[in-house]
Image (cartoon, rainbow, N blue to C red; front, side, top):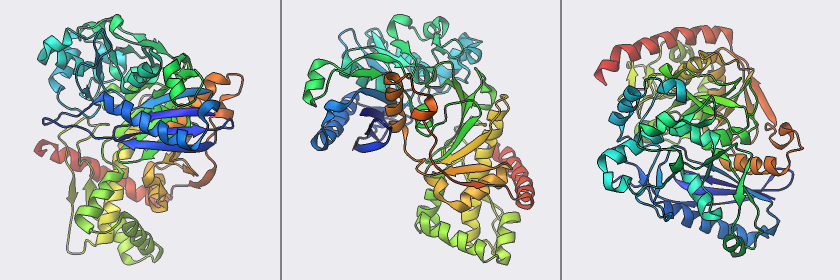
Amino acid sequence: MFLGVDLGTSGIKLVLTDDSGAIVDSASCAFEVSRPKPLWSEQNPQDWWDGFCAAMDKLHAQHDLSGIQAIGFAGQMHGATLLDEHQQVLRPAILWNDGRCEAQCEEIEQRVPNAREITGNIIMPGFTAPKLLWVKQHEPELFAKIDKVLLPKDYLRLLLSGDFASDMSDAAGTMWLDVDKRCWHADMLKVCGLNESHMPALFEGNAITGTLSDDVAKRWNMKCVPLVAGAGDNAAGAIGVGIVKPGQAMLSLGTSGVYFAVSEGFRSNPESAVHSFCHALPHTWHLMSVMLSAASCLQWYAEQVAKKEVSVLLTELEQATKNETTDTQDRTQNGPLFLPYLSGERTPHNNPNATGAFFGLTHSSSQVALTHSVLEGVTFGLADGVDALHASGVQVDEITLIGGGAKSAYWRQLIADVLQRPVTYRQGGDVGPGLGAARLAQLAMQPEKPIEQICPQPTLDSVYQPNPEKAQSYAQRRAKFSALYQATQEFF
């Protein structure tokens, strides 16, 4: 068996797999985010350990864990966990969705003019480096005590093995990594008042970083098994659905929208807020466009406007389409436009102040038309990110749809029509990073097996081909959508 540890923002999930890679069981534990001041987002690292122990206790009550061969890690990216020389936590961890350090982002780019070439990214408040510069400037006495900086999942690794280690994909999100050369960059560290001694050792995602300590192993009747480097959450999620080679891509319709594509070598397009990171496998990179509100737009509309369940709204929309009413053509060609920026936007606009809007409402704007507009607006936003990513030169053979929003057949067809290319939907694609972490552990222990055997893509459910007539209509509406953002952005 193999154990995958997925340390998320809202909770931790452990995934247990058998020797064939199938999921045997899982256990989870939730925890809270602290927001003590505007823009701040923090967590107590002790909560991560307590959650891990609680989830392990659940698995231990149901299974003999002595058969686990290795443990892999996945986790929320960019979080700053600060330790002193005695390995004690100095302050609550500053999380990926903390927005306090916008000024420090600008300072880093000014002081390191080639920062974007080194890191492959615009320096944004979500990343780790500007958080440390903020601590240096606002909490100097605490900063002086820092001995090590760890990402969230790697703090758990430390408690399990005593090792300071991280993987390339997670480290790429710190803005201290030379993403092309896959090593810490002295200039990026120096601008934050740090050096390589503050950093964990770097490993590829399928490499062994240490072994489980005796006392931890005895607690759950385990052997002192190897710990494997793992990956940041998105890279681990990609491993879990078999997105491992150039030409493969996935579009995730979760709370946020992520387009993830494996690239042939290091590529970047930071000017359009495309993220360029190392993948979780050696000599492999990926690009990622991020839309901050995707399925959450539909959830907001369902709760705050329509006052109906999302499933009911989608059923009504699909039924109206099957009936081919006059309203069908009206809403797809002349219906309201929806700007989906309910929590700002990342790719391609990099505009935290962007907001959402309905435009073009009339007395004939039905609820079904508004539901369609929400899905359409999110899809247009996703398409902007897809285009920005492809502008880096990445070639994609197949786009796989995953996430809760992908369960809607209507939305899947809409995406194919807007992107004007086929998209695939696979069974069981919504498994999360925990499975990817377990598979990276399996890769470390079974290096002789082909990667496609350990990391297969889920079974194909269906392929959605674009409808040429609808694709042309959506292209015209997408042009209006883009013009609407440009015309209104000064008012955000």
